[in-house]
Image (cartoon, rainbow, N blue to C red; front, top):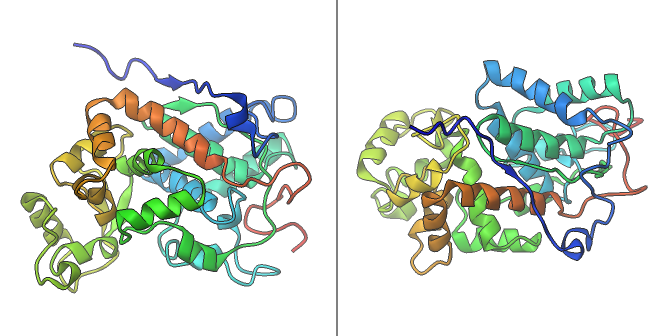
Length: 331
């Protein structure tokens, strides 16, 4: 019997130079080779330790990178607390409030890096490295993270409220939000595959369970057996914060089971299931491909994470290198 855990897929992305560097010529996988050569291993070590006591932390850290990049680009703005020049924090925006987590682990990573290479590595780059390590350590692909981002000086709460895709968005709205930051339909499907690990609170999908879109009935695209389980976990008038596995088949592993679940109407969030259940959508063939070919998903996911990490980074002398990820320097 083959041992699928005995090898590791390392995705090497070969792209035309113009495609990678057209808008961010200073991002490179070797950015810290001389100034902080052990940065990747430091990040991985802290996350590996965190996973021992919190198996969902990998998904939480990956989500932080996603929520960072969709607002003002990948600039670490999602990490900023309210205070000083930051009057409205992105942490308090609807998609993040009482939902985004892992900030303590980011702080531990930053402290460990500062011990080895003070004043060198940005918090924005820490989020990019933490996402890759989180995926790799839970069974997913590895890829060379492009680095050299600098940290933003502002937060954009209103942007977080409007730009970040939500579980209640239609597929058309989600696709439009991706397109607004330069990402395409393949990126939509591949990055949605990050829901192969992690949890979601009842409040993010309870609208599907009892009275979907005012019909008085559950969402018809929900598998009836799965529906019964979810109704038990999330009863009407129950706690909206009860946690549920995004992927009930392998909740803590990064694999392609998320897509197999969609084929049997076991997508937890409305935005998940719509990838497969929206009639005539170009996403359906991509879901089918990823469900049947984990390597294809892993390669696409790694490329889409690189694409997302390239959204409007601050480079050169823009922004700063924060000494504390929670606040701008001097505040």
